Length: 253
Image 1 (cartoon, rainbow, N blue to C red):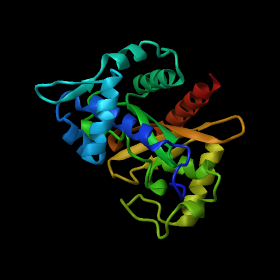
Image 2 (image 1 turned 30 degrees about the horizontal axis):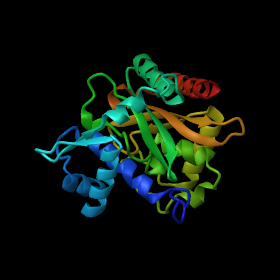
Image 3 (image 1 turned 180 degrees about the vertical axis):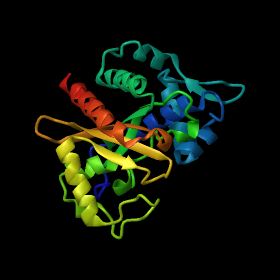
């Protein structure tokens, strides 16, 4: 799903600085020396150190002279205070929370990033183990996930150009026939949502709906999933309508 060639609009030094800032934030004071941050981001140690020193000079990070560990700086906190609270991302997260309460299942939002359909936000169902999280991962494989089927249904390229044959089988329910997959994808366009019934993992089902612009361009996918023990077929139509309406309402605002 990644387009050929590099993204010519991105500035490498800024990209690296942003990656280091994220690494500092995620480390929360543990493993946040320049050496460890360089390792976490895949940067050369000297390059990481120079960028960190530049960020420190602007107050965007702090370095403890005793431990040599970096933390988020006060300048970044001050900038965050000017961030609007009513943004599309905050509204999307609230929509995920509402859907999770309504369905009692995990809900997620996937958006296109660098040519991939990636899960960028998620609200876990109550009692769900942490390893069930898909946050940060891609909606792959396309033929065995509800999000992937939605992508295939609304992509600008034909289905056969986006999949690799033969289709890999993950469970007894995985669709491995391209013609059968094409029928399912056509049904997604008719219903407005896609289904996955234990096709990637035998104990996981999912329902997904597209986020479409007015000219029918796919921006992302809204999803709901849960254990197969609660994936009764009679729930799918109701959940599909709920997710589809939520996706439409999110873009309508």
